[in-house]
Length: 510
Image (cartoon, rainbow, N blue to C red; front, side, top):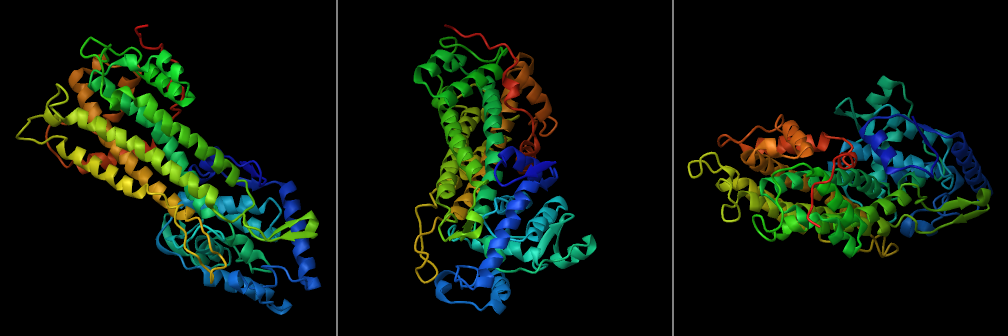
């Protein structure tokens, strides 16, 4: 059980709740803050003091005063009119993260909602009821208005949800579960949709997947090193300490430990003096991606505990300020950075694939084919990897450099952060497939060299992976192998950091 208080949520806890199904609870202290901020909203309504979002219209309509009798209808109209999302729904894990992050933000006690709103969000999480939220339609400023409106629809019993593995009408699921829809009151609709939770949820789930892939890319690169008789000296600690980037040093150390005990790797001068960059520069390239991932993690862990709606209520209601915390620029830039970092893992992987299959670059069977000429082997797997890498280059174009004014130019600069997060997630899926292709090719190359000569860690991985994709003994529909390997990598959750610490380091020339 993870206790939510608006301030201490971590990415690891998002993993446990949104990917592994752990239950959540609300701290009593945060609920006290929720109740106090709600009292402030009620005082504003009663006093008829003009306050944005409570008794005024929204956006360009902020100068339109709303009568006390219509403040609740105002919130309902807001949610229905803003639910303009289109396209395929977000993955279920992202939808769950959106609910979690919106709840966590409201628990900070700056938003003026009733306790029942927080409790309804918690019910969605713990009952595995995930709003079906279209991915497209957010500008990433003024909050993720369209996506979060589709989330808010579910709280009031409208829209659709994913439950028990299928799309259903919200009210049908509520009736089965004995859940009553809430009736929105003053400020609550706005409090639910002003925020960055769509881009941040997709960014958080994307980060968790990218982190796993970054570790897996090292294991797969180690297999390739063995398949190509790579030169281990390039991972000598002195080289990396001389440059000084910690992440580069860490990758080199993990590569040394993954390859500890291998008879397949070589030393400089034994077969050749230097390897190509895609082997020799694994610590430099992968390490740079790790630097970017660390930056992204830092920004995400701030944003998942941030108050991002508008207006915010301070000093027990004495101070209500309209600001712009809903602007997604910090996450937009982070997502664009993560796009590049992830894409580079695929880019260098594809070059290693080329070295595994190109007979002009190695002494392995051409294209790892069982019968070269009669059978094409892995030839078109490299084509597929090249296509995915090229697609990533297009997706990696920064979304955050674009802005289109909205709401009659009241909202004249927007972040496009949700587009950045969506494209980032698409890149991550492509990266996984490229790494799956490298893995299939590296397994075949290592097998050709002799699995009895592999390092203990890579051999263990080899034996496990061979249960997913068998040896290439003849041409077959390799698309199925690629997707099966990619799915296995996505589901394969283990302590990738721990795997590097126990082996004796491979012998290096000083």
